[in-house]
Length: 120
Image (cartoon, rainbow, N blue to C red):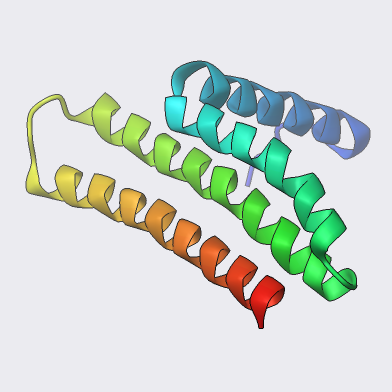
């Protein structure tokens, strides 16, 4: 396997730059990501305050962080599908629907977690 020549600190720096570019692209091009990021900025401090211990804080805050993470993956999937097929194809539609379902399940997970931690 050929090496890119990027090792150690150089590899970490480039990976950080690519990650920031992905974060920036999601923010610029995806309204849902911007909405979920705003929600996260509001809910992360609330989760930190309302969690009684480290486990509760991690559950509340972790599920909030998970939502924009899954949204980025969904947006990446949609971009690839759109790039390789302008015409409708059953598999393309299925892939996009499954990405959307992943976002929905993440929202459900977040709501269930917050409800169980805060009210039970």
